[in-house]
Length: 335
Ligand SMILES: *Cc1c(COP(=O)(O)O)cnc(C)c1O
Ligand code: SF4
Image 1 (cartoon, rainbow, N blue to C red):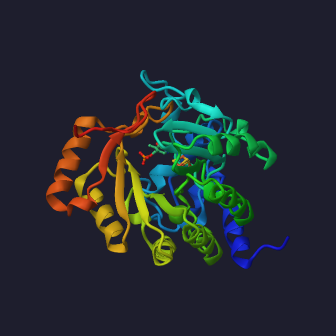
Image 2 (cartoon, rainbow, N blue to C red):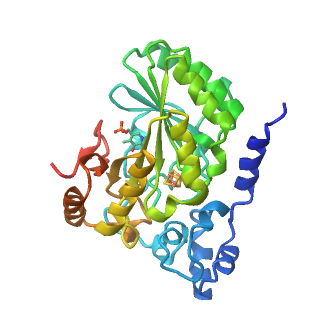
Image 3 (cartoon, rainbow, N blue to C red):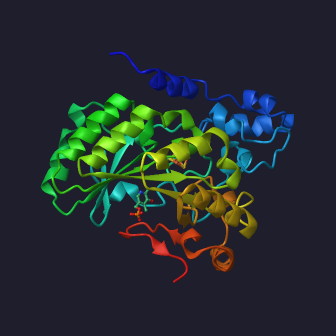
């Protein structure tokens, strides 16, 4: 089977992503003393950052808000009370391997264990991705479960990053999804438009347009935490998705030292709405082992969102939420 040129392009960009802390440090001209802790922390959760994302960082600045999202630190190895491996309770709601059913009317399919970037604060840094189904045959029990539960109107592709599947695999998934009569929406949660914009090529957008035309509307949820992420080729990819008619939302994780101030969050929302993306959620950090140094106190989060309300149109203020294990929906932190 031959791949289109654009499939080759993004796969090449992915294969060239930086995985070696030494290379990261020399490329960005960062202080050498960052290397030793990085080498230690990558043993727990490897480094991964695509070229495109790296290009949006400022060389020589260890405080760069994009760098801080991907740079492995010594702090990740600390044990902090209240932080655990499965903080959001994913493993308790695993229905069939590959299928999480914890939200009313929505089913979450874990279609890919891989990501194009490794966010150090990731809530799934300890998720047992290796156990998810890989071959098409292994997906059969998932399709059976989805066909028999008519309460499911929406399928959410999650992971890992679902857009790391090839177009051919995605086509197959979309075909199976369009065969389920009660499913009206496909939602795709992906960080690729921001970190590996090459992935958003014309062939992919056509696939989504076909699905939408066939009665299953595709919603995209991207993930950007800082206004500097919405630039260059990422901005073009987002414009292309919107031009293809795909409604697009953004989710942000509130991160200490990265976006925990009103000016940054205002700028992020403005960049998004100026493109046509709706700021959807501002997530309180999930309390997963190794991420405590990113946590912002809820009281501070509430104050930030109150300030956003005074400075932005209502639709540009994201909902400040937290995920609580065992709850079937996000909990609003503003009450
Ligand atoms: C909350 C959540 C969802 C469901 O999102 P809603 O927009 O609240 O329907 C899906 N996937 C993940 C990983 C979530 O945390
Ligand atoms: S892209 Fe999402 S799932 Fe992947 S490492 Fe980042 S936060 Fe985690």
